[in-house]
Length: 355
Ligand code: NAI
Ligand code: MG
Image 1 (tube, rainbow, N blue to C red):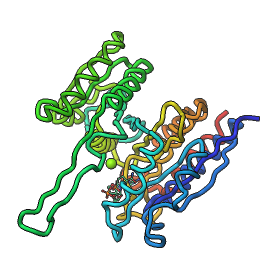
Image 2 (cartoon, rainbow, N blue to C red):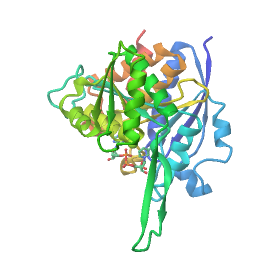
Image 3 (tube, rainbow, N blue to C red):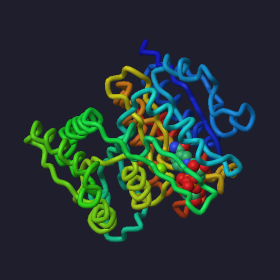
């Protein structure tokens, strides 16, 4: 008998209630086939929970979640709830409390999906955005002062530490060794001459320990254009919290839809559980209609299993996604007519019928 993994399942809000169960159905199918067990427990956290309890998660949530091997998560946020709260009180709280300092966000073109980049093929669009996930621009250290007065002011301070930069840099270079041995640091040190110049300097030092990996840096403005014009130049992109957030949505767009992007908030040392979620938000505009694309969530399931060491099962999920998209089994965001559950069933079917 294989291992048992304790998985916390957090649907969150909006389409989370549709795509997370879709992802779970795929997880169950591979667990069954590969002989490991998933001991799942659901937690109702998010903006819906906030409406009832005045907080995004229970007071003992972090203590409880800490005992799990991984968290399988949808997204948080609802139009009727103050949108400055979900990241602060749920997403960033989990990411920082559990030292999930890597945000691993792969970008690739699936067979049968048309990229809006009409000259680019599957071989051109295949890279990973590694987003620093615990510090930088998103530390939420700042203040609004005299906001209602003519002299009102606001500030947010970015924080970059040597420790934080070194660990994300080491992760990126090691990842590049498993891929095509190329790291591009996406920065803006020509204008952020303190924080990002330091970021560049520390990364360049780490780069010297990986002479076999090609290292270069590129400014975020050029990188954005290059995502569209020449995505084939990228392998591992190492970037900051804010830039990585934006670039991963752009990555989703060049794959054909935001709904395709999967991700992992990873604590590589496994001192704490890691959290796996699609790159997009709760998409309240399409919630409750069974039309959301579940592939980003299903891909996140594969990333989770890979992290847990179930690499064969993870590969099978990716093959199932490829088989599904190449059959033209696509949701509305990709100009298809399949529902959320039909896409998930197609992946499950693939897993159940292939040897
Ligand atoms: P969003 O990513 O939820 O939606 C952007 C657009 O992409 C929408 O038109 C949506 O319909 C579409 N889309 C997203 N996922 C899709 C899918 N799986 N299939 C098909 N179409 C999809 O971003 P938005 O609208 O800026 O934010 C909505 C809410 O989500 C906000 O409350 C925001 O704060 C929250 N959010 C939460 C995140 C998280 O929990 N990690 C991340 C990003 C946003
Ligand atoms: Mg985002």
